[in-house]
Length: 316
Length: 316
Image (cartoon, rainbow over all chains, first blue to last red):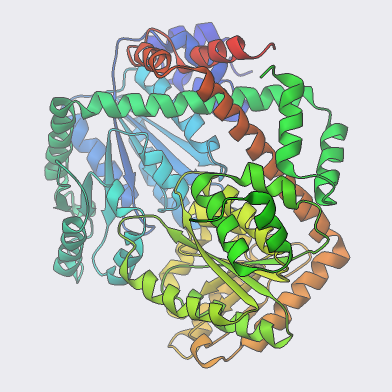
């Protein structure tokens, strides 16, 4: 029987027990118990630095993550990895292979790796992911890497919750870089062009640099790092660039400011979740169905119904 | 001075005045006045059928939309188009050209076209877009086409709010189709492979069909339509397929069921928005900043703070 004694699990987590970390994340992800768990671990002194790795499928993010982790471990730190997997029924084969390779890292006692499902729904993803990374922080991780598959909006949302974001591309993506323009280029703190032995490297690099010149990165200009992750080439430089970005954030005060922004977002998310649950509990399914029928038949509009529901529950 | 007399504008809207429709959408999008406007138009008898067009950049969605609209107009219906533009600072050039061509349609009195910004934030997009399409319905549109740029999560969200979704691809996207697997293949009711004169057509079509066989579309198998939108080839067939999907939805009861699901989602969104605004009004910036400082310093966690805020405002 799985252990559901949360206070005990939290104690074991603080003592560095891997199984407690794994179990707590499962309770958060599968049984929505963040609200019971997170308040118990809030007074930890330890701070983790979080890095997001994103980019289109096929650029080698998993291999890059693997090699980056191995490099970080050379400085004898503890590293946590949260790999976000899309929940689509289509996403079997290819991704799984990468994941298995990545999971081999986890035989190392200083590495904790965890796949979490992307729920497609907003908030669903980041809430569990954020709580998961809090568990890894309490577990003693110095670095937490959040790797996302694809570059959809939800993935972009996730990297908004990390200290440094690495956008991974590969050579010969000419048209795709144009496509990336719309909305994701500006999220990168560091660009990686992986598979740097492929044709079209310089073209890709110069396209990125062109887009960067047209962008509004104020003080920190994102570096472009060329890597061949498979052969461990460029990984040391990548770690240097991460440390440089981290230094920049610390000295400019942005590290604190960004983290507070994220806390504000998180707080609003919590408030909305609690209230949704509260309203859901207060309305019978029948009442809800009747209201929906009324809106469907255009007897009333959704704004007026929302107002009515809230007025019954809250004294405004 | 722009007209802000909402009851008058709503009256003019019902009379088919283009400028009233445009002004009301502006008030909703730019001044967040959906709550004031939508309740006034709820008792319209007219129903519009909504079609979402999505797909990666560069596959010719705008040209397809243009030709589809011209085809629909042959049956002398009124068509509304909402084109979602990403708000990224990077999205200038290429998109703009397409939009200008599309906007030339709007000299036709039976076409109403409107660009709306994608806000990047969840809900922000769909709320204004949904209200926009309600305005177009009240305006008398028989078809409303919502065209989105890109295939990010937020774009996928939008097509969840339409009756039929068209996923547009083009030949020679081998790898990209693999990428599409993760999360968006299953949203399509109809596939269009546009630019069907390009190399690789049959490969792309057979890859789509392979993915379709692996998917769980229960009763309605999405058709794959080959088009060369530029030359108006395949557009008639596309309209046929849309009508066929519409018929299927009507007869199976899914049209009503899907619309009710969307209403439920919309209602929750409204409730959350109203409550967020209410809480935001109730907290001073100073209080909020102090609470965030406390969480940042790990003196307390965000769950407990959220509970405390809600307890002050609601009697649970």
